[in-house]
Length: 150
Image (cartoon, rainbow, N blue to C red; front, side, top):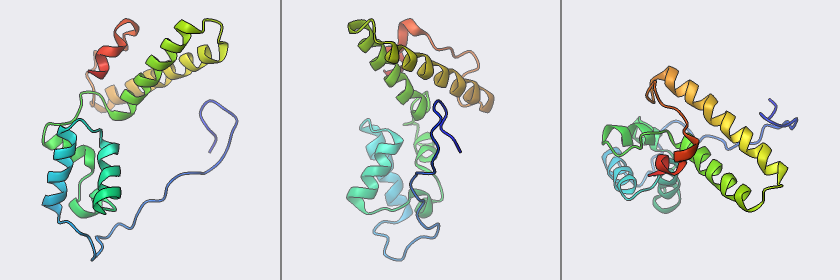
C-alpha cells in the first residue's frame, strides 16, 4: 500500500504481540487498569501510557491482559480527552507548522505541509463525526487551535 501524500511504498510497521496472556505476566487485569488510570490522570496520552506499561512495568499488551484497550479503559474511568489522540497530534503538528511559517514566510515546503496536515485533520474529523466519537458540529477553527490542546 502506498503512502498517503507521496509515491513511496513499503510495509514497515510494528508487529502485534501474541493475543494470549503470557504466564509470566507481572500484573493482573485490575492492577493494569489502575495503572492506566493513574498515568492517564497524570496527563499522559493513551500511547504514552502503553509505552510506560511496556517499558517500565513489563506489560506486553494491555488488551491481552484486560480484554480492553487503553482508550476504552480511559473512557470508562472518564480520564479520556474530548478529541481522539491522533487528531490531537495532528493539531500539534499544525500549530508547529504555523509558528514556523510565521518566522519563515517563504518556506513553500512548509506551506504544503500545512495544507496536507489540515486536510488530514478534516478527513479524520469527517470519520469521527460519522462514528459518533466527536460532536457532529465540531469544526477546525484555525484561529483557536491552541484551545483544542487544553
